[in-house]
Image 1 (cartoon, rainbow, N blue to C red):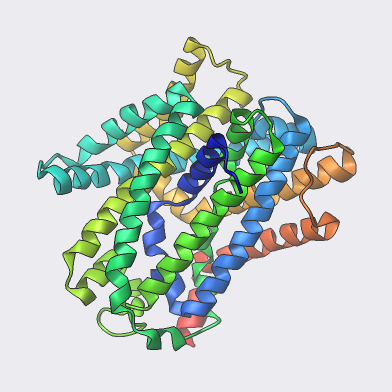
Image 2: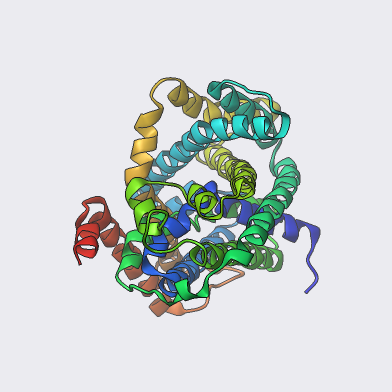
Length: 408
């Protein structure tokens, strides 16, 4: 299959937005279920989120024009859909941007120290992250595409180094463990591990509504993260035992990150260094995708033209609120994201696309150049699955599911 340059760039934007530094922590939560239940959970959620992503693309193409989620929700679900989109989208993306600035700052400082041995204060990382990479967001999708390719290349190299270092230490006997109840604990984290839909309206405009290129970009872009996740599950769960001082259960209880557990087991600092590089690249690519999507969302919702003045306004609206939060009450939004992030992702990227597609197809009788396969049954399944995930998330946040599983 020949891959057009913009298709490759679009696919890498999808993958970069999807793969965050949180991927390193996936095995710590999913691993309590064992390898095969973990892989099944990832594949099920990947299918669900890929399906709803194509629903969002369908609605976006159906309405036409250089639009974003606000216009899509308004045309298909009316004023109520528009209000829900505004509230959930702004909460989720401002929270994510705040989180990337709060976490990315220290990661950038650590990255500078690891490469140059120059020690910077922890606060010094957030401002360069904002202004250097915010500049590319200000310039637009073409510039973000270019710099994202560079950092995705670095991410792949760092990821390959981690896998290369771990493979010789795999103990295949660890793969026999399986507890099919424990995947429920991982729903929160997995729910936020495939959240790339926000970049779709931006890609539609960037690729001039070319359906064939957009479908290719989404397919390739969603395939990359699931391969990365599955391989990471295999190598880490083949090295870290389920129990013991450096086991997954102990790491989960004490909130010890996966990279530290691996370093303890292997006695090798190279894994931690590779993980540090990976985290840096993953935060940058996700930060670019999230803030570019937020900027385009605000342009659509506030009807701001992409003139020089308009882009300055969008830059300010995109980055000033998270910066103020970082400098005043960073824990407010980070705590809110921790408790409500998964709900926001499921509502915005799971439930909303299914409801919009249903309305566009069967109520508004709109015609689109692309229709996601599955008909009414698939749409109903997506809606039911979204509600089920939200129910499981309530059980997780109240501690009910964890109490049942750990008690058993």
